[in-house]
Length: 74
Image 1 (tube, one colour):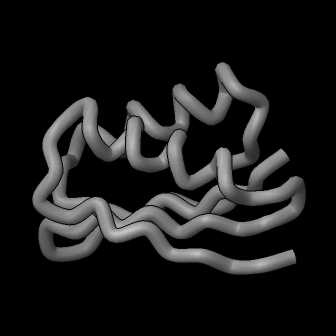
Image 2 (cartoon, rainbow, N blue to C red; image 1 turned 120 degrees about the vertical axis):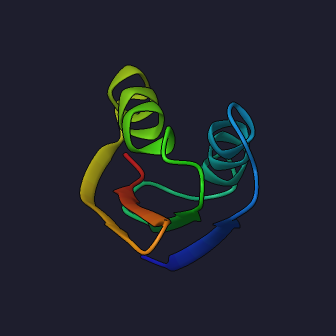
Image 3 (cartoon, helix red, strand yellow; image 1 turned 135 degrees about the vertical axis):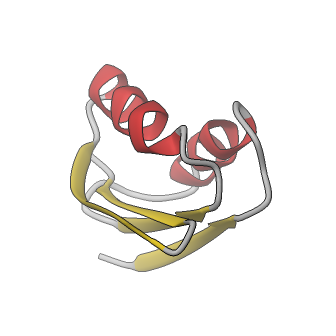
């Protein structure tokens, strides 16, 4: 299991989701990806993408205009 971080700051929809999808393709089942964003839409978009693609959202949080989603690749 590896832990990776994706910097998707200053990207607007749909780019954070596309970058997340591209990064997940390079990972293996059980790997953890932390996605750091500034677009508030990711709080709905990335969890929805995870549900559709079978990945697991472990945590979502926001602080001072930064949005973080932690997911497990399944």
